[in-house]
Length: 377
Image (tube, rainbow, N blue to C red; front, side, top):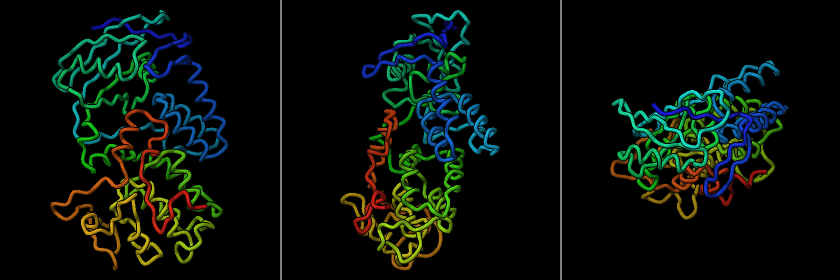
């Protein structure tokens, strides 16, 4: 077994990732995030702060405590306080990095031996870890210790929560928690359904967003829904978009712009807003678009329109009947048809794996009748 890796919560832990230098103590980061979540006056702002904390790699135990604290103060039960999950996406190999529980010495060792337990075989390898390593450095150490990983992307997690920063990984290590490494396919080798699987939102996190959106009052519009999804960088599956649509279509108001989209009410605008943030562009999850299916028929992603013969073969609908669009009645397409990544999910996943602050900036958003979700106002 390796030696003990110690980090004092009050010391200044610094390491250079090649691009930035982290110079905040674990304690100050915790207090800053805690205060931001505690000060949130309402559900929407609280969940926005929660999403930022999650993206920053705050540990599951800290997030759970903050959620419980918030809901106790507001006397509302949290649907996300039970913890977060990272669902297994696609085929991957797994290894566990077991950090020994830290002592109370308070001074981090310059180099520590970390035991890596590989898969189900029980084989062990040792890697050297020190406080100057970036997250990519840690990935390379794992590859060196476990050559079978090859050049595949390595995703770290602990307790089912994705670890996105070296800071968070060392925080987990300090708490004596096990860090897991999943070896995933390279983005350029993935098919569309594999991209969608890895980008999909776990059910518990989705329930938290759905709970927040359900609090929207009649003064809210599809523009507010789109802005919420953008601000929180939420990418939905077709079924999740359908569930939010059903929850809000009779609850919110129509946006003033664009006034010509749909006949009455928010239905067409809400379809535009939600499908803009849907990872399944070929899915028609609500056939009744208040435009006689013309909204669905006129959707484009850059130069790609699904009305074309080849791309149109990949369309499918989840419920109801279609009168004007040819579509399969499930998620399966015509045999031999390979769906094109029209919304550039590969670029989104690459940005997400690189821990970009707004990975959806790499996405090609849909346009219909020259309207986009940014048009809604």
